[in-house]
Length: 269
Picture 1 (cartoon, rainbow, N blue to C red):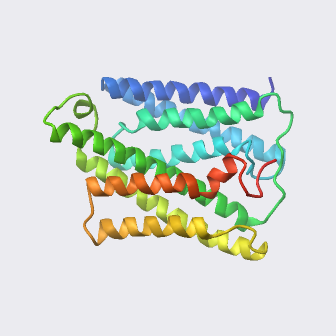
Picture 2: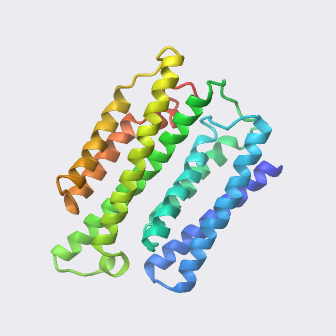
């Protein structure tokens, strides 16, 4: 097993340990479990960074291919989640987010299993790389926003039924979940906007090889989402439904999904 294979396996093991820590802390909160989960995630991210640096150095460019993109997406999900954990001081979402990170990374482990070399992308300039990375960050933030929205609705359901059970004992307050939802949606929208600008510049240079309609629809949905939250006072339950509906649209319209599933995009083999 070479260095790349060793790092791939090590990242998977450390992230799995972190995911177990978050799940155990979600089931029964303790200071030890919470620290184990957070520090495990940080260690996994550090090793993950070394892996991506090693792949980049070996290939001579950022690995924007369908082989590596799932683990790159996982790396960025950890960044977004880490920001939300630090700003909200709550670890509940880690019980769902870290298993997602593990699954995304395992896609790349499977893709690279038995591969001697990574198929490189034909260089398309800095705007191309910028728009892909920005879209992945937006995708990660929207996924976290959707997860927090689902948790909000589950907790709200228990409260409304006056049956305070599993979720009430383990999830943070409705206010914190709503705060996480708002921050993640805002974070994602900012990167979606930046990625759309970079995509427009790149597409102009490359003779508009991609349709901008799915991007425009997604941007309008999330712009309306933020306007409804900020100006229309849509918080709580309505904001949660907006986030879930927006992410469902993203699943079908987002260019990164097309990349992961071999869609019409100049990435990957």
